[in-house]
Amino acid sequence: MPQKVVRIVKSEEVMGGEPRLEGRRITVRQVAELVEGRGLSAKTVADRYDLDIADVYRALSYYHDHPDEMAEVREKIRRREEEALEKGAKTLEDLA
Image 1 (cartoon, helix red, strand yellow):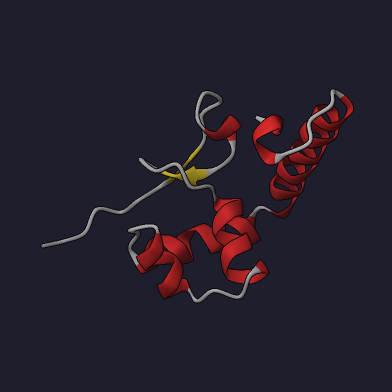
Image 2: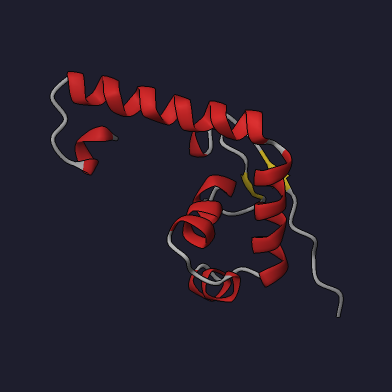
């Protein structure tokens, strides 16, 4: 049985418009941070988030194929966190 190809999609109302795996609430950036930032294997990430391993590699490919977009996403998050801290946020829950 052929597997459904999961696309990378964006919509402002889901995950703040970050590129993410279609039908999921995990972003391309999150996948890249887990694999490249925390050193988890692609298989571990796939298993942990109930993804096909190809989806993990698709997200990593997108991340590296769109460096300017990913830099904009990181900057947007940094600004949002900075604004929350200025407003008195003390914990991650306060940042939401």
